[in-house]
Image (cartoon, rainbow, N blue to C red):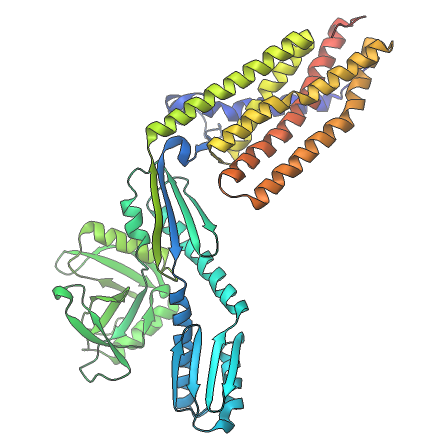
Length: 515
C-alpha cells in the first residue's frame, strides 16, 4: 500500500498554507492591504509583487555616460604627477601635454628617456609608451580603457541609484546597457523632470583658495553662480573634495536664509581645520560642477569639521543640492539619449489583459483536466491552483517586478503545470490495463513517471537560466517567472497531487479505477 511519512504530509501542508498566505496580499487589493497593515501582527505577510513600467505606467530614460571626460581627467592626473616629479628633480623634460587617451612629453636630453619611462610606469602601469628621439608618447592601453569604462559605468550606476532612492521613487530598474549606457525605468513616475534635473548634474564638489589676482598657470577662472556669472580667479589645485563629506542637509545661514550644512569625515575635518587656520582672512571658493556657488571669507579657524554653503538658494534647491552631495558625485557627465513615458491607463489595460489571459488559460486547463481525468482531474486542478499561489508567494517574497513578459511566463507555466500530472495519470492507465491493482498501479505510475518529469522540467529550467544569463530587461522577467513556475509546478505535481490521491485511496480503498 502507498504510504507517505507523517512529517512529509505536515511539510507539504505547511508549504501550501504558507504559499496561500503569502500570495494573499496580491489578491485583496489596496484596501485589504491597508486593513492587514493596521490590524494584523507585523509578521503577517504584506509584501506584494511590484508592477513594472509597462503595467503601471511611468518613465523610461536611456542615459549616455560621457567617458571621454574621464580619460581627459586621468591624463591630467598623469601630467600633474609628472610635474611633481620634475619639481623634485627626479626627471627632466621641456614640456608635457595631455592628449586624447594619454600624454606627450618633450625631453631635454634623449638619454633621460629610460628614466621617464620608469616614472610613467610607476604612475600608471597599463600605458603604451612609444619613444621617438626626445619625444615620448604614452597612451592608455585597451586593458586600461576597458578597466576605466567598467569602473566609470559601475560607479555611475551606483550614484544614479542613490540619487533616485533619495527621492523616494519605488522599485526603480537601473541597469547597464551596452558599453557606456544606463537604462533607468521609473514605474509610477509620470513626470521625470526632477529626476532628469538631478541626474543631469555631476555634483562634483571641490574647495579652492581664491587667488588675490596674481594669475598664472596655477590658477583658473570660473564664473560665480551669483552676480550674473561674474568671473573669479581661483587656484587650480583643490584643497578638499566632496568625497570627504559624510553628510549634507538643510540649514540656515546667519540671516536665516536657506543654506546647505555639511559635515567632513576625519581626514576632511583635519584638512579643513589646517586650511582655515593657515588662511584666516582669505576668501575660500566652493565649486560645484565648474561653477563657484559660494566664496565666503574665512574669518577664523574652523576645526569642528562642519560648515555651511550659503547663497540665494530656494528651499527646493537646498534640498536637491543636499541630496546630490549625500549621494556623491558622478564620475562622468550623463546625457539623455532617449526618454519616453507610459501612461497609467495603458498600464491598467495591460494588467487587465494579463488577468483575462491568465484566467482563460487557467479555466481552459481546469476544464480539460476535469473532462479527461474526472476525479483525478479534480486533484490536479487543486494542485494547479496551489501552484499559482506558490508562484505569487515566491515573487512577492522576492519583491520581484512583474512585466508583460513575466505575465506571459506565468500563463505558459499554467499550461505546463499539468504536464507532470498527465504523464503520471497516463502511466497509471497503462498499469491498470496491464492488470495491476489500483494501489499498485498508482504507486508504479508515480515512481516510473518521475524520471520523465525530472528530465522535462530540468531541460526547461536550463533554458530559463540561459535566457536569464544572456537576456536583458523583458527577457529576464520572462525567464524568472518561468523558472519559478517550473519549480512550483514540480512540487505541486509530485507532492500535492500525490498527497491528495493517497489520502483518497486510503479513505475509500477502491477496487477499480476509471481514468
